Image (tube, rainbow, N blue to C red; front, side):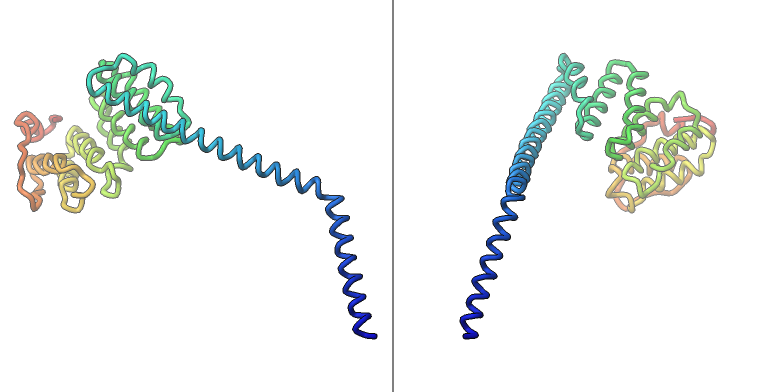
Length: 248
């Protein structure tokens, strides 16, 4: 009967599928189990590695934090040894902070040339975050400023002495002083006025903006912001800025 033939065909089809599955498993089963096991082992290894990296990062950050606390309290006995390890860290943030701390300690001890070298190394390390590299460049320039040609200062900081830069305040101030040294007093006054602008209130520190207002005024550029001036420019700085051809 047709229904009997249909049932028979279904049974045959089902048996064929079972035979195919059995043959497939017999041929590839061991490989599939091996792949699954290898995947599980790899995943477990990644979890272990990730955990170890997290623990190592936490240890380095804790080391750095503890060291900074010791330095702030005047204890620098272990600083060199700890920093020598941390500057080799594979974590860019830790390495950058350690280098900046090394340079700061060198400056504190009067080793300016060593500090300049550290800042230069940091500024040129493309593996570090840009904000650390820019900060190092500004600090390097500040240390070398007295021995640099004014135009060299201006050229070095040109990409940072713009309102769009988060370092505009510091880079702009150094640039303005270099402009005074070049005798370009109007340009220097305009730079100070730009630093003092209300538009930069969110990125330039208040004390720096107030100082910029006063320097701009001494140079004959009006840059009075809305808020009252609470700080006074040191007389020596004002006198130097007011005297043509002299550097503050």
